[in-house]
Image (cartoon, rainbow over the protein chains, first blue to last red):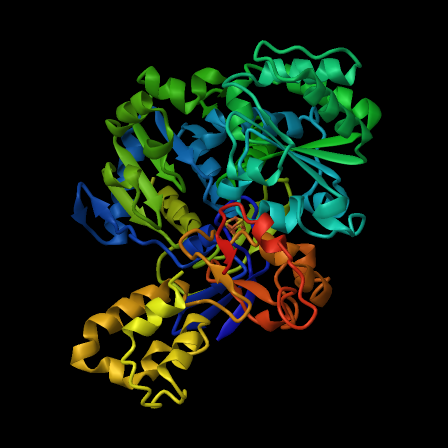
Length: 414
Length: 152
Ligand code: SF4
């Protein structure tokens, strides 16, 4: 049977126009999604099972063991949440409060500063629908959506014809890439590709700032000043400009100050917005949820007396300083995404993984609890990269518990 | 691409007409244009032609998914981003609310769509490169980030 539309949870673009052909509760064809999305929707190539110390167990035993580890831990950490629904995230925060845990997510070492600035209204932002209908200048900065978010350009940012952009990409939009290498996305931008050296973002921002102020832009890497002036001109003439900020930019800036200065400058002559290129489908959702509850987006410690926040509560510092004595990992694979040394140390902490699929972290975990694939085997809500809430539908049935149900059961046993 | 003579040399050259064509040369012409399937030449299945048959299969299959307009997708390269689907001027006219706006197709008049994560031709005879008023359109090729589309 052919059904839809469903929402793809392959990345934080959360494309909501997906159709699927279902036969005997199996997804046999997925339409409109990109290849990355199809592989997410069709399910894990290697599903995870419930295990304790490498032995297969039933789910009750795994949940009991997880509860025991967390209960006896003095400094537990709950980490991940990027591939979980908002409902699950609320539960993990509740669990963290209950067991006086540290809680953090991947935003702690990637897009966190940008999301924080947006939630604190320091950075102007807009929705992807506005991008589709209004944007005439789009900048991919340290981002390569053609690989990370394959439908970004076709669904919203460059190719579609929008209400105020009827002539589409050929005449009505200009796409620009600023990056350290000629990515697939940069290749689509033709001569509007600005190649900068590693960590050169802040210097490039300063040069662009000069150009916007009608001064001759200089860079230590000798980019042709004419090229930067030409870019400044395009930006000044823009009606509705959007910067899509990728990890390349975030990693390279020591602080957001140069970026904020640039955005303010751009907004003197035209309208400019920023959208962070969030990777996991609901990482932004976790930051919103924790922010609503604590005023912080990540790096929180629910101490017995008070809630603490700061860099010392980030997963990196907690592991580095040997603070954590047990960790619950949900909807994430930190052993694959953390810097090598930190990952090695984390692997030696007793780990509990809740996930539908096997991954590097689950292989090193003391307890694994297999859950339903969100957006496919269970419904929920999530927050897209631009901050818009999206409802996820269930596509097929499963007898596995959702992440949310598992957390509830763990709480019940503590 | 193999040449016409290369293909012809590998056929039985008996002009037996079992494929429905008057001569083996006529069969070779159609095979090269992908208008006919190799298997229509039944004598090729005989043991003595086995090497020739296998070689022909190999020469012809890389463009097995080729359409009449020559639209060819390298499936290993396509990431299903849909840039071509949204940029295709025929799709834009056929489906302004759906594909042209970046969304799933809203009717069946579009000529390329994304199925199972890969671009597939559907009504490719409507492609601008086809028919009496053909033009050399490059919209799908130019917008592909992985160079997965080719016209051969
Ligand atoms: S771009 Fe992201 S959300 Fe959209 S179909 Fe691909 S993986 Fe899914």
